[in-house]
Image (cartoon, rainbow, N blue to C red):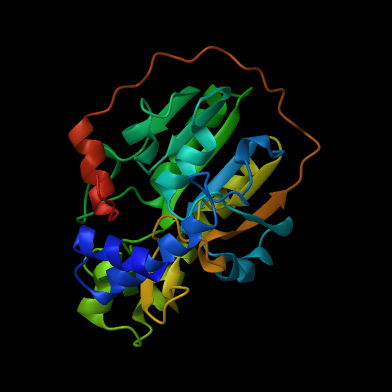
Length: 303
């Protein structure tokens, strides 16, 4: 096992100890799993919901304190991925989801849609420049996605609505986060640039979460049916990346530590359920490929 890890590290020319930690952890978990995703995770489309709100990179323990301010029941689930693209592949691949409208500020689905053989009734991408103009924004703010989601809920009253916010995912958009971090920084580069023990990342991450939860709170009463708030994956905030002693930030794919796959599942019950009707897809909305790639790079993904 150790020899195989060393050979892979040498072959991939991994440059620093943080990358080495991610790679060793990935190999450890993949050796225990042959499905290409976290086999212990749920199929989100098999769960019972009319509206599923995804908070990108939201840890269960970080969300838990906010649950008391919302009207519903907090549970938890295990995600199929520790990174959005892995989560998308594991849940969307080879499926006709003609009862789903996906409103998202994360471009990963659009980036791999054709190769994963997936069809939705409709897909609304909220990452183009018109959705993130002003003040140097590199991603759509929560209120922008909320506006598009509300439009979709009115236009598609008989569809399951999947609403995918970027926050609390990096970059940090709150006053504290913008003061201490550059929007163009990559989260996995933070250990080298800012150090590990100063607590700045934790505070900026929690601020991002507070901002998106506040916007979700305004959205909930306007959605018909049973709504669930969850996450595609969690986040490492300086934890040791098992099984190494190396501390990192971010969410490397293929690493199924609790901090990365244990996600909230907050249920907002409703007696007024939607009458869901699958229908053929609308005309596929085409996106500028370079725009999608730039948005993913702004989020720290390699495309």
